View 1 (cartoon, rainbow over the protein chains, first blue to last red):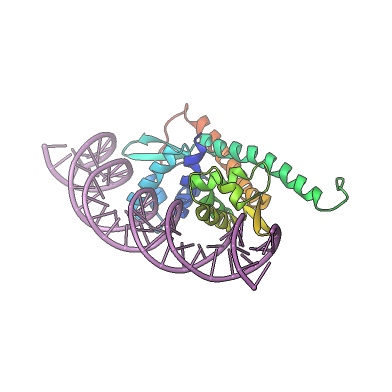
View 2: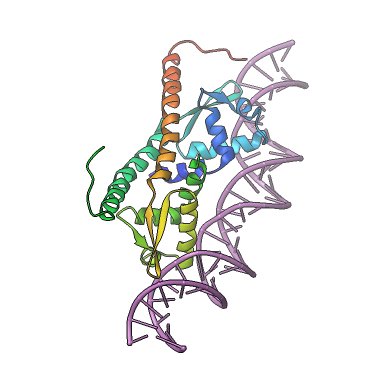
Length: 107
Length: 107
DNA sequence: CCTTTTCGTAAGTCATTGCTTACGGTAAGC
DNA sequence: GCTTACCGTAAGCAATGACTTACGAAAAGG
């Protein structure tokens, strides 16, 4: 049910870049913002959206706020995609088999 | 590398609904639009975006245009997600193992 | 206590975009 | 040939959203 927000969150290039920057491991807001073409508040807003989508988690560490990737959000998108994947492939194969006269085996 | 457009395409609820309607099999534009809360031209525009994202294909059939799901677009999103999945889980586990230990000092 | 660092949020601006109605174009039916 | 069915596109409009600067709050450090 969260995959909707996750798709919306990952649709924005800047937000994807923020997200990808957390792939190697947890980072503070300032650390993420460093080397990005947008301001730190912008990064903060992006992280908020990612958090509401279940894609990241945060915890305080002194005055800094450290963000990490939350596998839960990724899992939601993945399962939606996989469920889709099966039906789509089945329909795709059914369509492909009807075009030529002979049906094909595996190979 | 079309996963960027795919994410942007799947971010919109109406467009996802159009996409999901093709899951059972190919449909004409009118058939997709029937039973949707938006107009037929709106559906047409959504299908155009989905097509440019590599998520659907179309072919003429008389005066109507039949759209089907293109597994290629799904595949692109899936592989991006999977590649992400591994690194994210590894980092997540590494973080979980270090938490019960001592706190860390990062500059 | 006062200053510094780090961060989230408010307010405002500007571009993007999803929707509608209107129109033109092509294939089928009579 | 003329009408009907089906579809893509153009133009216009209203809403969403991404970004900036400015400000306030909370923790650390002298």
